Length: 103
Ligand SMILES: [Zn+2]
Image (cartoon, rainbow, N blue to C red; front, side, top):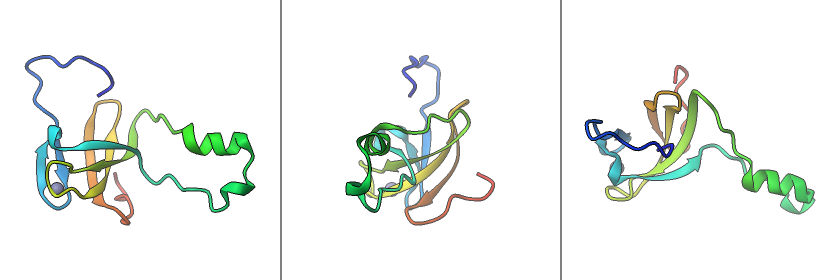
């Protein structure tokens, strides 16, 4: 992640699937920013607003909510709260659930 080469001694990131528990990151696929709302009336948007929706995503330093799918496991989607500064996983939670308050 982040394009940084991994040193050989780094432990593999372990991602907590809400259904399966912690698994190696190789079992998962990244799905982008979580909680992006699709516009209710896309035809009412200007081209600039539509482009905003399609392409503009937050690039937060710190706590970031993102979607992952356990593609090599239960194949279910879930959300992950991650700290982009130190790559620490704060919490995982199921689709439709609110992010944990303290995450
Ligand atoms: Zn799973």
